[in-house]
Each structure stands twice: as structure tokens, then as C-alpha cells.
Length: 127
Image (cartoon, rainbow, N blue to C red):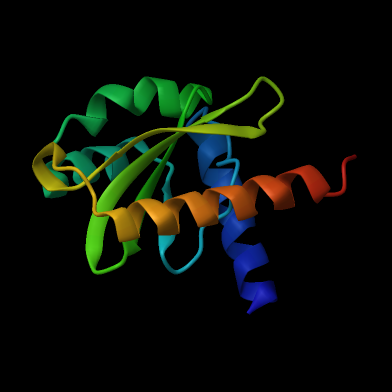
């Protein structure tokens, strides 16, 4: 599984670079999928009936990272803010379809994933 995840991360990185973007600060998994292309961002906005497409330029510039979320029986879109060096700093927005608020269970799951991703980011080998 780790080999497959590494390959997916490398492909995501290559696609982001090809579109002029930056790779997501926390790698995707089965529940949290990074949205890394303009086409994916547009599709997310259409499927979720919200304005995530307005964040496309920021996402490609690395000012935010977007994720498609499937947790606690809910489907959501997540925006996180990476710091200057790429460290995941905060959860900026988490919305269900039509900008509905997520359940407490979804909020907990997202916070746990985010904190684990942040921990892994800090412990990663540099250089």
C-alpha cells in the first residue's frame, strides 16, 4: 500500500507542477483526496453546488490546499492553509453540499486527520 501511495503522491506532484501548482501539504488517502487541477476544482464546485472554483488560482499558487472528503457518512470539501514553507497551518473551511455545515463527527474526523498530517509533515525528512 505504501508503494502505491508513494506513486500517487509522485503523480500528484507532477500534475501540480505541470499546471504551475504546488503539491498538497498533506498526502491523500482513502477519505481525503487532494484536489490538484483546475478541472477537479471545477468538478468539485459543480458536484457540491458551492463556490470552491473561486479558490482555483489560490490552490494552484499554493496559498491553500483543497480536498474532497468522505467521512462519517458525509461528503465535504475542505480547504486548509499551508504556511510559507508548506506546513499545514489551519483548517480554513469545511463545507458540505450547498455550503451546509458538517456534523460534529465529520469535524472531529477532519481535525484528527489534519493533526496527524501536520505531525507527519513536521517529522518528514528534509532535503
